[in-house]
Length: 102
Ligand code: TYC
Picture 1 (cartoon, protein in one colour):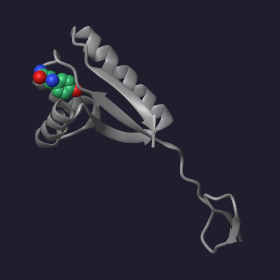
Picture 2 (picture 1 turned 180 degrees about the vertical axis):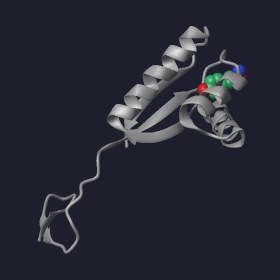
Picture 3 (picture 1 turned 60 degrees about the vertical axis):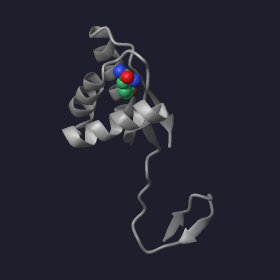
């Protein structure tokens, strides 16, 4: 049957047609004020990371300026960004979470 490559060129293929959704990277930014432990808690609570995984990501953000919390479809990424920013503000921390197209 006819499939559609990323290039837009139709190619013959034998597998059923499935299309991959656009994916979005949820990015957390460093700042000078948010406590390290709060960032670890955010990564555990909203991104289901273990303490060890969350600590690694937090330190990467701290030393490199930003880091990836996870990669999701648009709707899920948007929801995570709002939840993290609301949670940070509710706890009086300036932590910033954004998303970017993969
Ligand atoms: N830089 C912060 C501090 O020294 C810790 C921190 C890490 C803040 C990651 C934000 O996304 C962040 N307390």
